[in-house]
Length: 157
Image (cartoon, rainbow, N blue to C red; front, side, top):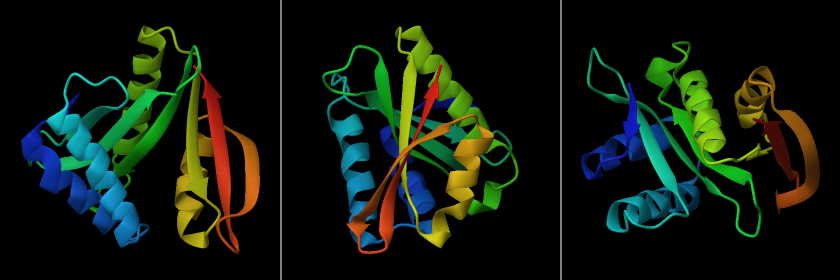
């Protein structure tokens, strides 16, 4: 079940970010910062957060943070989408992605942007975006650090 994020979900979401093995300590801090913004300022409209709660176990199996891209009239950024490795292969991320599409459409949006890394540990992530119908829009060499490019995907919704 996908629902809006609640304060009690914080630890479960941080566990997901940590368990994927892709994110370093500063990236986990960034995720926590966005999560806390959503908790502490529910009236803000920059970030919208959702979780996928596994109905059988009541565990947080995945999460999504999406928001309108500043200075655009229909573009949205997918800031985070992740599922816990315990739930890989159970379509959690796919359902969150479809939810994000519908969320954007309901707000008259038309473009969903997702950024990721070129590192081999992100092969699964890049394959996910391609499988979900995202197109490679750009690649910026050495963006994160030498040898670690920024990969930008986009999908018209």
